[in-house]
Image 1 (cartoon, rainbow, N blue to C red):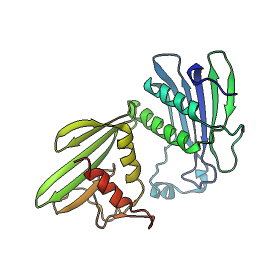
Image 2 (cartoon, rainbow, N blue to C red; image 1 turned 30 degrees about the horizontal axis):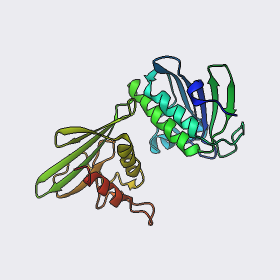
Image 3 (cartoon, one colour; image 1 turned 45 degrees about the horizontal axis):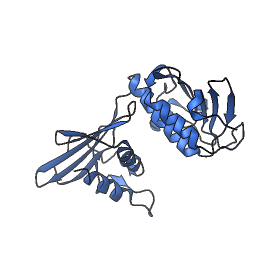
Length: 253
């Protein structure tokens, strides 16, 4: 029998990538305590098996030679409810160890001192929640600035600029359209971000300066502009990610 989510005072989350080659393979651990007015957090991520690669091979895949990271500090309390709701809604495997495919395993402790170790069946839900939480850690620690996506439409010399800023630490999405700012629902903003990372981007065709020619352009957070016509490539012929992205962004205007 698992713990009542309201009684949980501590979670420890371990993740292993499993059958993934370097430089992508890694492990991370989150230790979360819920006893105060914030989530007391310890985080460690370590990339593994890189000794078989040259520095050039690591950098060519978009990594650095110093990707391991540790953090100890406070994350806003709203994350406590998110993790407890996820725990409450989860189904469990009743296993204690991960297989070759890796994944997430948990340790939970309640106010009575009871400990439960298990592996959730809804691995994807836990993984994506942890990724959002890790992004919150990077924001709070100033390791990274809040994620920003920009979309630009140029029609007959008229420009429409859409800027979306994601604040993972407080789960807010700020929308700015030609200087007018408002907040949109976290779920809607997160859905747009998920779409944007589906296609492939041809960086050989990307440009740094803001485009002037008619067209639709996207900066997916790396500071360069990709043309929807020729710089963004659908990877799955059965799913038109480019069209979905354009529709989602156009609906914001």
